[in-house]
Image (cartoon, rainbow, N blue to C red; front, side):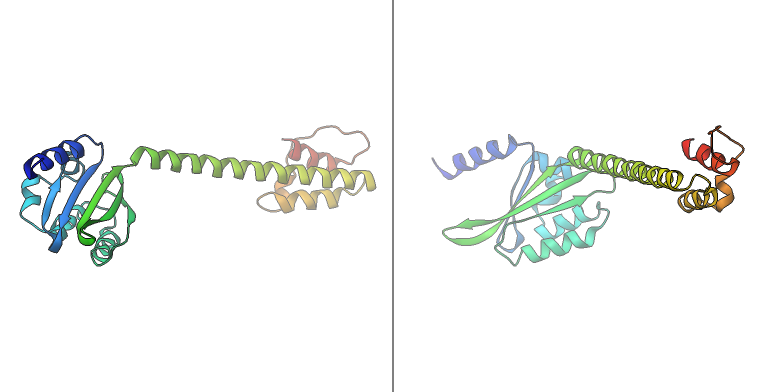
Length: 206
């Protein structure tokens, strides 16, 4: 298989993937890219072929919510043989995972392969799930607080049924505003309890 055949096979391979792929050689020279890459980063092949990778990534950075961290990451990788990834957020709401590995030939670093994966849907799902869990956690904490308060009120009622001021103070400490917030014109008759205690309990039950 000659060089042209190798290149055709490589092109057919990278064109078959759903990810955007950009390959740069020594000195940042353009080597190869697939159509998915140009579609994803909105940089044409003509704009890519005759410029170095720094220029390409600057065009990408111009579309990001926070371009400087991405450019710093690219700059550091160009001087390093490490494998790394970076999450980039575009101003239009898209979220990509950029994965980069060194291109090694004959044991020597001869460039870099950059792979862009669209993870927008995954990230949005994660963020929605996190928000839901936060809301559930808040609701559970409120319910637990209510249960604890109920137990405290019951203890007070058992120990001293006439301690209405203590019960009102307890409720007022848990509700927004002053102690007068607890004394609404809603009463639930409770045999053996004073009117103040009945007010407090009716607020708590509602």
